[in-house]
Image 1 (tube, rainbow, N blue to C red):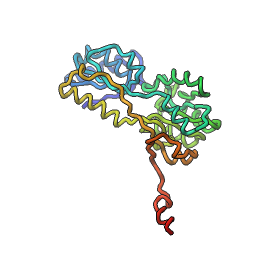
Image 2 (image 1 turned 30 degrees about the horizontal axis):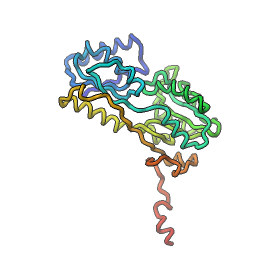
Image 3 (image 1 turned 90 degrees about the vertical axis):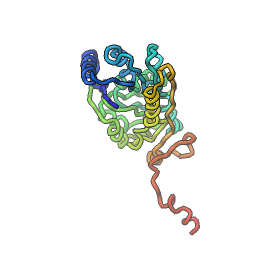
Image 4 (image 1 turned 90 degrees about the horizontal axis):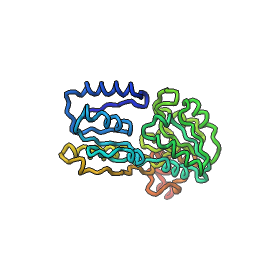
Length: 283
C-alpha cells in the first residue's frame, strides 16, 4: 500500500499540479497499481485528469466526497466510491441540543474555501441565515477567533469546522487550535468529526473516520479480489452518530436526558457517588 498527501490546501494552482503530476509519474513509474483510492474531490479531479497518462485502466475508488460533489462527477465506468454524508445541518441539530433556546451560530475554523471536505458549508451557511443569526469567523487568524469566541452572546452555539489554514495562508494543527479556542470560549462547541472530540468540544453528530475508512478499504479489497467496478455501484454511507464529552456537558449545564437517543458519552469522570452509590444509600 502506497500513500501520498497532495497537500492541496497549502499548494494549489496549475504550476503545483504540474509539479505533482511529474513527481508521481517518476515516483511510481515501475509500479503497477491494482486500484487507486482518492480522498476528497480535489484529489479525484486530479486523478481523473492524469489517469489516462499515468495509470491507464486502473480502477479508481473515491472517498470523502459529499453528495453534492458526487453529483458533479462525470460518468466514468472505471470509477466508483462511497459518498460521505456530511452537511452543516447535523452540526446545527447538535447546537440546538446544546443550547435549547438557540438564536445564533458562531462558525469558527480555517478557510472554508481551502477546506476540501467542507467547502459546501459556505452555501449552506447562507441558507441557515434565514433561520438563525449566523456569524462566520472562519478564515480569520486564530488569535482573533479566540477573542471573538470568548465574548459571544447568550443563546449562541459555536460550530467548529476544522483549522488547518487561514485566509492569510498560516498553517495550524486543527486539534490544537480547537483546544485553544475551547479554553476561552464562553459557549458550547459543536463538531462534525470524531477525531476532534476530547479537545474541548461538547460534541455532536460526528463522522467516525475509522468505520468510514474500513468501508472504503472493503471496496478496494473487492476490486483487488477480482470484482469489476461495474459490480460496485456508487453508494452513500452514513457513519455519523451522536457523541458528546461529559466534561463539556457539565461545564455548560446540558442535561443527559436532553441528548439524542443512543448518544455516546465519553470522558465521564468517576465520582465517589458514581462508584459507591449503593453502599452510600445502604449506609
